[in-house]
Image (cartoon, rainbow, N blue to C red; front, side, top):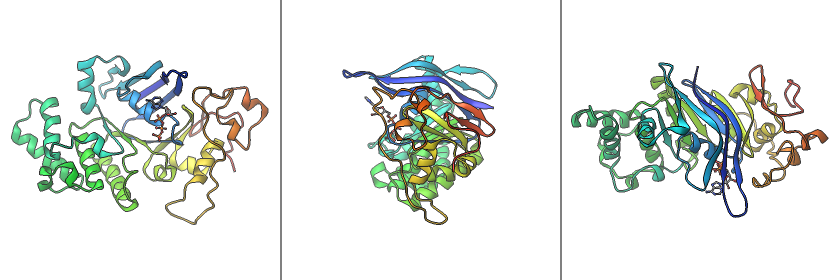
Length: 327
Ligand SMILES: Nc1ncnc2c1ncn2[C@@H]1O[C@H](COP(=O)(O)OP(=O)(O)OP(=O)(O)O)[C@@H](O)[C@H]1O
């Protein structure tokens, strides 16, 4: 069952030199309790889409089409893009929370981490007493691996990894159904990164929230995600289970991405990368936006925009695809 449904979502950044089509007609489901990885090169629209879903877009970003539907457990549907100010305040934290790349951006530098958890609880759970809030703050911090006495620390007194854990603790405060994590571990070293990823998976088991996990690092996503969506030039070009994508990528762009990153485990492979650069999002090439960089492009690829088609265990938008996977 889906907890979130994005349909035909388009977002432009309006500027003097023309609209940047950062997200173009994206349709994507987030299932209850799953970890959905969102991958793609820098500029492919991952953050823009996540921010649209969390209603965090700021001008000049404009949603030009589409809907975002949040489904509560009781079956009621929430039209996220038309929530008013007060409804939005209730929606954030309680139903959907966001953890950004730099915890410094999501944490308040002049407030202790304990006080920040307390603030969220005080505003959104007015029934809790002060003692209950303190107890909850301690419990949350311990749950993410921060000792109780650290709740009196300011963000700058914590290491990068600890700050990121604190940001995750705050996101968990009201037990949301969805947590969006935008490059939450990118700034951290590999060991800390892996600890936090393991922690996120364990927390997910315990609390049952769904995660949208954004990174350009596909090998990292393979480790943490149940399902992965690959974005290119503002569109979703392939979705599938982490296993299926790894075993048999269907889109040439996915294959290129897979070959661009060293595996965390297993034998070393040549890093082939993807030749060329992503297109200018003001003037997308006709047909498939990836065709100028695609070694397998046919003439038709420069004329016809491939739609995302359902396959046995995922979706793919490629005219070449015949269901056998690429080699
Ligand atoms: N405020 C803005 N004004 C104009 N264009 C913007 C703005 N913010 C983002 N863009 C453009 O929108 C496109 C999508 O950006 P977005 O940050 O969503 O991509 P991303 O896949 O998350 O990339 P990254 O991994 O670098 O964060 C990019 O081409 C970017 O330059």
